[in-house]
Structure formats: C-alpha cells, structure tokens
Image (cartoon, rainbow, N blue to C red):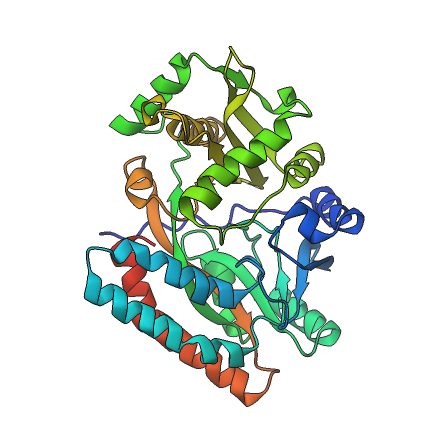
Length: 376
C-alpha cells in the first residue's frame, strides 16, 4: 500500500472556544461532565496559540484513557485483543505481553501528567507547532509542573509531520497509540465510492426528520447521551469516555461541538445523533450514537457518518474519522495512518526515562505491526 500524501496540519484552536471549554470545568466537577474522569483543566498560551491543559495524578484510579496512558495501553490494549478471536495463540501472546508491560508503564510516570491540547475527546486535532514553539511550551510546562510528564496525543504523520519532527528535536518521544482513518479529499467533486453513494442516498431518502445544530431541544441532550452510550459504551467498551447529558448540553451550548441528529416522526425521539468538533480545517466526530435496538437495515450509523463526511466534502475539510471500524471507513475513502502520543520525560528520574524507552521500542517493533495488520 502506498503511503498517503502528507496534507499538513489543518487544526487551529479558537481562543474563545478554549476559554469556554475551560470555564465549564470551573463551573462543574469533571465527573459531572465525563462520569469516568477526574481531571483538572487549565489553559496555556504559546506563540499566539491557546491550548487547553489537563492535569492528572498517578494515584487517580479508574480514569479513562483520555487522561491515563496506563488505561490506554494496558486496559484498552487488552480489550482490543478481542479482534484476534480467530488467532487464539496470537491473542494469548499479545495479552501476556500487554500485562507484562504494566510495571514498565507504572515506572514511566506517564499517568502523572500535564497533557497539552486535551479537549477530552478521543481525537484532539493538533495545531501546528514549530521547534521554537515546542521549546517554549516544554520550558513553560517544566517550570510550572516539574514533576509531571508532558503529554500530547493525536499526532499522525499525515497531518502533523512537521510538528512531530519539532517535538522529536526538542526531546519528546513519540509512542505509537492506535491507527486512525483520514478522509482528505478536499476537491470540489470528491470521488464517491459505491458505499458512500449508497449512504448518501439512504440519508436523503430517510423517513426520519433531520435535526440540525440549532434545532436541538433541552430534552434531546439526555437522549443524545444515551444513544452515544448504546454504541460506544454498551456495544464497544465501557472504557470509552462516559459523556453525560450535562456534558453534551454544555459543549453544544458553548459552541464546542455541533450537533446533528435524526428524529423519529411518530414518537419525536432521537434515533441517531452525532456531535462534530471543528478545529481549523479539520473535522472530527467524537460523539456518534444510535438506537442499537432498531433494525440494522435502517442504516442509522451509516447515515450519521455520511452526514459528517458530506459536510467535510462540501466545506473542504479534512475529516479525521478516528479509530475502529476499519473496513467501513476504508470503503468510504479513508486512508489509515498510525497515531502517536508525544511524551517528554527527560526531566524525570532514570527509571521513567528508561521505561519510556522500553515502551517506545516495544510499540514500534510489536505494536505498530499489529495496528497495521488488524486495523486497531
């Protein structure tokens, strides 16, 4: 497979959106917004760009992976071995390897962290950073939080090659995390695959009522959170962020996410929903949900994905479709790319530095081949 063409970072943080995001966590405890998360939210400005920050302590148990690398690499890693069900020996070996890495990750200190550009989403598009900005950011955070690892998620070589190079040059280690899927056709008339054409026709012909961003009612937020939970928590894994109705409502009202849904005309209830996050020219879809008790032939998930993909095409946006559902996304024009987490631990004890070096070697030599082979 040919490597996808680099597109350059299309992300850009809106300072007003960052301020609104941080203000929410001044008004509400983090667990009221994301039920399986305990974190502190601050902001930092570097080179004219403003970033949200999260701070977490090593003794905060139970946090989901968006703020806890041990949950991402150990708990979520074990969960993802379900994809190896037809490869029993490989599954057993992979689970044993992941479990054996638990002491290494504990010594790394990565759970005791300050995380940059953490919007508390599965995918946080990263604004471009040159080497001078990376150095300034690193030194600012080292002065403010000298005992914490510095973490930056959601980097990939397709969108962030220059930023990744700057991070490496300033002492960051890039740890492979997962494989994501990017739809980057920004032409006026993108080539539609057969599946994309079918999905759009399904959306255009649906008997459900389309609910636009300005049409959400107060009672829709609880239903939206329930639909998300049906898909991402009940069907996939409870390790995903548990966004509450309060979170969906506050993020939407503050303009942090844009909402779209389908409403059953007879009952008036939402049957599918998506929350989209726009950063510069990069679109992500952190909230997707549908009524999983309804017939799969309705194509509710397909329609929500088609709506976001159509928007990306019409507005010339890069669409980071995040991880999972590899075959579905490939058949709709998305290309795979390995996503990385950048970490800086050179200021931490030798045990932390050595542990991160071991993690980097294992993930590069074992993790990346598994990601690419199984589309994780």
